[in-house]
Amino acid sequence: MDFSGADGATLYLKRGDFLDFHIALNKSLERRLGKGGMSILYEKFSIPISTNSMAGYCALSGKPLNMPDMQDLPAGTQFRHNRDFDEKAGYDTHSVLTVPMQDRMGQCVGVIQLVNAMDEGKIIPFDSDTEMLMQAFSSQAGVSIVNAQLDEELSKAHQETLFRLSTAAEYRDKETSNHIKRMSHYSRIIAKEYGLPKDDVMSIYASSPMHDVGKIGIPDHILQKPGLLDPEERALMETHAIIGAHILKDSNVAVVRQAAVVALTHHEKFDGTGYPRKLKGRNIPLVGRICALADVFDALSSKRCYKEPWSEDKVMTFLQTQKGKHFDPEMVDCLLKCMTEVRDIQVRHMDTDEDFDKFRNIRLLKVPTLNDA
Image (cartoon, rainbow, N blue to C red; front, side, top):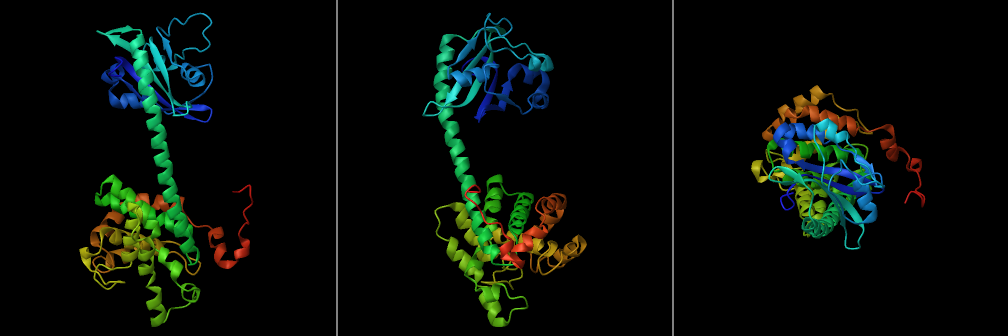
């Protein structure tokens, strides 16, 4: 907008046969309505990629369109000007420059649309120099957007892999995949309320599902024993924290390295009576203190195949009695302040009878087909 002297601009990203609106700016409307009023005007929407709209026409043709006045389109113009926005905002759209954003292969990834070139307060057409400048800019923007999308896709793939590996460990235990989801969300909620930066909050959310991955190395006769473990079995069971840390350590990926810390420390207790290293207080890494609370909270408040959930009052009472003993008091306070959000997570990721079928009869599971893949 600064380079072109445009009053407004809109960015669309291609999704299949549609252009999704993503962001818009408009100097004169913002001066008149403020940012709050602007946000009401610019609601999310999608438009078909077709010749009916200027943006769709541009995406189809792969060429820029420079219209001096949308209020006076030449006869035979295939696209039309939708005046709905102008009427809603009390705005007059005249000159419009629409430029496709393309990847390195020349495929359209989106469209940039500039509105109302300004010169000393008057609306003028966009000149040819601006059109050339915007073509060069849009090429760089297209490549940058594709790279950002690939980075996001890779990040999601990493998270998916971690979650799947976590589920593999839980599958051998009496837990469900929803336990992992709930526990990771509780960890995120606690970290956010504690005041950690957004990146740190999301790192804890991504690494916390791996807390029990070390159970992969625990024998079935111990992991799935229906009764209490004897001292020797308990000692072997507790090694899952060390096994998990060894599985995850020395990774080149920061979130996996943090997951190793989570795996090693989420059974430590604030008073120093936990395992495997009997760390005490703030000697326990923050991620360990957060995940210890999130894990136990879910274990108490959720149904298991061997027990019914505790009532919320009973869980709250237990957490209060364990402040400074099992749990960091600050972490407990953070969780209790966010119970409305916690309850929402419990509802969204509630276990069903089907989630426990794996413990009753493995044959109940559906065999995947090639179509499923």
